[in-house]
Picture 1 (cartoon, helix red, strand yellow):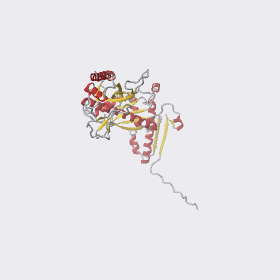
Picture 2: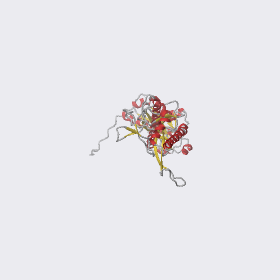
Picture 3: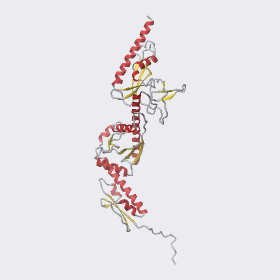
Picture 4: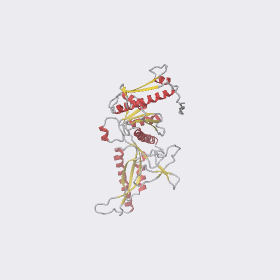
Length: 414
């Protein structure tokens, strides 16, 4: 007698069999042939099933729905992989065309970026502080201008779609490297949305490199948002002559109950702290978050017979008084000849003075002198009206005050 087979027989599936045939330029597909490709080609996949199914060839979705569930999942997965492969090949081909692409090529590239599976997608939130002079649309327009200007990124507008930009040069590349290669370093599209920018990056080195690049682009966009917020707050300061706590960097003085504000960034000179007026209000932002850096400074030597506090008050009440801020003593707002707005401040500065050639020290026998330092804070370098004219006026006024102080001494000691 024949012993029964202990292995259970596999049940026959209820679905009909499915056959897949892949061709490359109408030739049988092989992985080795795919690795030797050096030109564009046509990749075709044919799925054959048995059964009486009515469908239209112009409706691929309907074809998939007509298949059994297991077969439909396989067909959809195969369709996505083929579309992703084709999109990646198209992006690599268009990338070598450089930044001068036709509108049709740009539309094809944007479509392929959304279809390829090796793309990094990142949403960069837009941080904006509301004020009475700028609306959110103004903020978006200013951010668009900053990005298009090339100050942060080298970008171009994607066809006629005003809400889409694409990057044409790697911001980390060396200047000589940028000039050598006309092809795009990678595909990076910036889609402007209401509250954020969506970044799509397809990198020839793979998904990991695309992810790192998208993070770098997000950081640069955040820097552009900071600059736009600074411009907005400076405009608010110039128009209503009142400070915003987001624009003034301050700290808490443990010895007093009042707040004091200081110079943004590290300043090597001795910093004078001044009482901040009651301008703080409820805000989700950190006070001083958009404080402008020091973009210019000038030192004026103080005559040893002049008192520092009196000289600073005299300069502020005479030369800088027309630019005074109402609720923040010691801070001045100035708009130069190219409509750039700056914050001005006079502080005490002490630094060593090189000895004279004959080795003699000054009349007081000191090895250092006191200086008054003009700090200019903004987003751009100031023009000649500050760097030359204002500095000359301050210097002349300082010399006049020194002569007045010397005259008072001579009157008391005839």
